[in-house]
Image 1 (tube, rainbow, N blue to C red):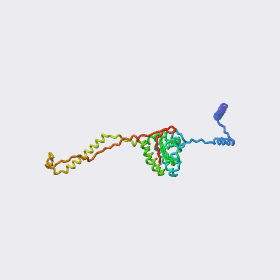
Image 2: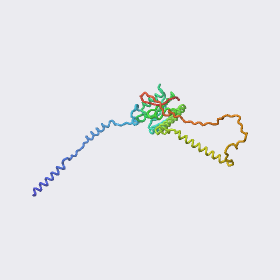
Image 3: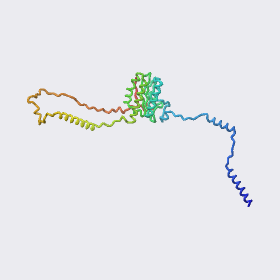
Image 4: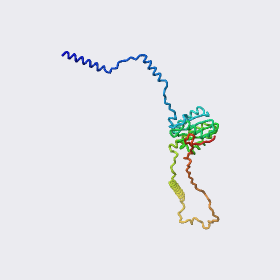
Length: 300
């Protein structure tokens, strides 16, 4: 019996040692040489860092020809540093809010190109235009040639129609002539902001003119005014009795008509504004890059 008990205890100890010993990972020592080699491997992999560079145009457009993206480019150096900073911030704020690039570019010379072609190419080959349709407007001013041009693209063509571009030019051209460039550029930016915002919110759309309703209202007002006038005059005739005819008011033989002619006293002229189709029309052309542009140009 004692032998059996001893064998059982011995077997239990052996089993326990075997079970807990299986899969055990022996401790290993890391030598100093291994540490040095590991550090050399890390240093060798750190020779070149990888960065994802995101440019403004990659966020703004899906088809960009150029790589430069700056909504104010003063190559002619006609603005002070403070004016440049203020205007650039204004152009960026407007462009991001209305989702349509509003750009100003100044150059010294057109290099033999027309102002319109120069503006179109500058827009296309420098990556301007908001979104996949390249929505935007660019004002180019050539200081030495004294020429200006506006190039529109995408939604800029829709919002800045021929009539609106003419209105803008009438406003900022006098300031260009007086070399007040900063004032001219701010007028351009503000008018772009107003016209594009109005176009996107449809605030300029007018309801059809209802002629019948207006005529009825006018007749009703006229009748009411006439009744009030007649009643006011009738209330003043306290001493006059109602007569059946006008004979009693005429003295016999007192009325003699020697000459008779008509006298024109007054006239009523009603004018209605004829709808102007030019308010919604934009003339377009194709630039050297093959894109469709609108715009206008002139001298100052």
